[in-house]
Length: 327
Image (cartoon, rainbow, N blue to C red; front, top):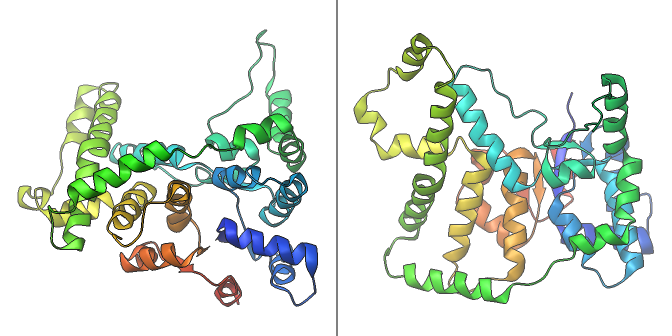
C-alpha cells in the first residue's frame, strides 16, 4: 500500500518547528505526524519552494533545524518543480495518443534533492566512457540518498542559491494586467474559464500538437494513418464541453492556471510576492498529493473552483485533518 502523501505549507512547517524546539510531547501534532511516518502511513514530500523559503530565514540555526525536520518527515522524498511536471504532463498526453502506455508514476515524487530541482532529468556519465551500470547505479543511489541531501542542504553555496529576491516590478505588471482585464467579463466564473482555456489554446495545445507531429514523423506511414483516425464527432470536438474536459487532463497545468486566474479575481486583495511561490507549489501538490494543508486563502480558492473534488484531494487549513484522513 502506498503512503498517504501530505503536502504542508511553509507556515505549517514553521508551526511544527516551534513544537520541535519548545514542546515536542508525545501528544503533540509533530509527534503524531512522526508516528504516522514511522508506521508507513504518510509521507510529507518537500518541494523546491520549501527549500527557497527555508533558505530565506535570517537565523542560520533555524534554517538547519528546518531542513533537518523536513528530511525527517519527508523521508528524503521530494516533489519535482512545476516547470518539470508541466513537461511530463504534456509528454504523458502525447504518449497516450501514441498508445505507449504512459505513466506519471515516479515523475512527480522521487528521492533526493536532485529530484526537487529537476525531476528525473539527471544522469551520471563518464568523460572516458568507462562507467559500467553497477558503478553508475551506485553513484545515482548516493545522489538520491538522505546523506547527500543533508550534505547539500548544509552547504552555504546551496543555501545562497535558494535565497530569493522579491521582484516588485513583476508584481506591478501582474496588477496592471489584472486591471486591464477587469472590465471584459461581468461573471467571474466565465472570466476564469475564458482565461484558463485561452492559456491552453495559446501555450499548451500548440506544444502538444508539435510534439505529436514530431513523434508521428518517426513512424511508418501506415501507423501514422492509424493514429490520425478517431471516432469523436466533429460537433463534440468543437464543443466547449470537450475542450474543458480535455484541459483537465493536465492536472498541474490546469491547477496552476486556475489558481492564478482565481487569485486575480480577488479584487479586495493585492497580489503578494509570495503568491508566485504558493501557486507553483500548490499546482503540483493539489493534484498529486492526498492531503494539502495550506493557508485559508488558498484553501478557499481551491474549494471554490472545485480543485479538491476534481483531483480527490483533501485541501484544508487544519493539519489535524491529516489524522482523520488516514485514520
